[in-house]
Image 1 (cartoon, rainbow, N blue to C red):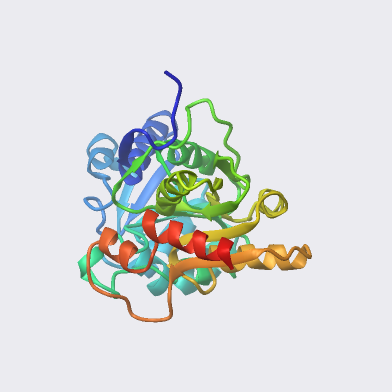
Image 2: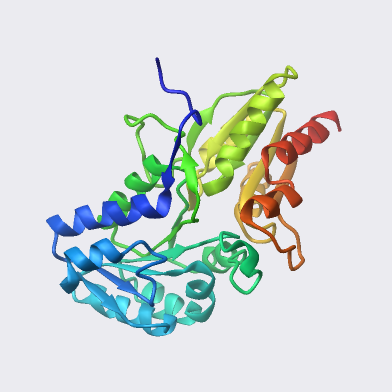
Length: 318
């Protein structure tokens, strides 16, 4: 039996990240992890046990975390700075801008428990701002893997990159979306499913709900394309323009504010290319959101399969 996207549930991307990083660090002793009291939440305990000399714990001090990471990178180390996305990209924004990006240090900033992964802990812990804040900073590549395969390939790619990277992970297990032999390139989107009526351009943990929505729409005779835009910056403009030329409508989906993230980046590409299509950004509105689990929050804001199918129907009927 051949591979079917979304048929099998994999593991949490964060677990896969930690295992891949440990494998890399065993081979190359220049690979270092710097963390801000996140060994447990970052799944780094096995790394610390196996390679204690290759992990630096700075405590709950995100600004120091980024500064130390930049310093180690300047000394030739391959550095991964791991911290909850909400705090990493807010408390340490100045250090990210100046110490890492302005200085162009090859640090991979790893934002864990991203989006609304913290669930009922609420808005203080949610990172619905990080893409907007970081997209405007020069020299920074932004990656959000959608499944375990994308995670392995993205982590391996970061080790050879000469410029800063922001790598974003949630917490829940994710469905497998790609067969293992799929070519992966930073900056090039992956098409999970072809379609001609509506194209769902999604990223990270919203790709599978988009796939489920496309399958629901198929039962009604509507053809849905699903694109995993794993690289937010640089955006794959070619894949987006191609989708706009071949589909009647575009729906972008992100676990982020509707301001400054994937949706607005896609809108800018289409407008500057002179392409007008029925277009909708699905994400979190300009409000402090309801309290609940990640799944409950997704359902409330229409980021689940049913909500996305509903949005696509309304857009196509307009």
